[in-house]
Image (cartoon, rainbow over all chains, first blue to last red; front, top):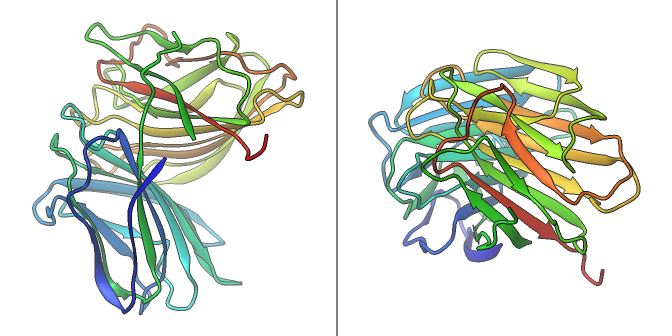
Length: 166
Length: 168
């Protein structure tokens, strides 16, 4: 796994962007350590597409009392990624995007995320898809509730083997 | 994390994918799967054989369907869920399987998290803890569709990685 790029916010900001993503890896991984100015979830979209019906997403989450699951079809972007939703406690996302440059596949995201606040918090397994065969060249991690300064987001590239082991 | 093997399903499809002769000098293994099957339904369970067998297996899962959540136990070889022909076109599952201490003499704990997307309310998300009650080292892994008679479709990919501790 190779580090591609990263940002640590020096001031509050709503958007962290990764542009001109290299196309020589097989998979991507985003790692986020962050929190929001006010309690609220982040959104994710690719290649500047944040309108129309290009996305769907689902989640399985626990709030310390009750597990729930929900699904959303034909969305303008992926939202409700909750691992950063608290204004006091930092949260974590590990987001895997498989085959991000594969022209035969829609781009599917798996995010394991959460935060704990000593009596509050969430843990979530999240899935989303960008219904496009286009390669991902840009990622926007958007937070309408504003990323707090100090939030760190890193992008990694993952390769695969030429050997099959068959 | 070092790539060990990768297999991509060709135009004819594949009933199973096997990684043989897994090197024994890593500490842990990780498998990443992007899969779709020929089931007419939206989904099918992804099965994993260890050293060619599916016996001595048990699992505990936490799952979500897009409308409900639950937890269960089983004795199957399931490690996740693949998309099927009844799901959104060109959509493949996103699954990660982690196997620590795969050469050790203890029973093998396997952790997987699996998502299967679909442009509908219904989809499948799961976290599974799997136990292989065997003290044997893992030398091969095979993947198939849990339902008989199904194939993985073209472009499904399976990637095996090795992780090694510093100084090991």
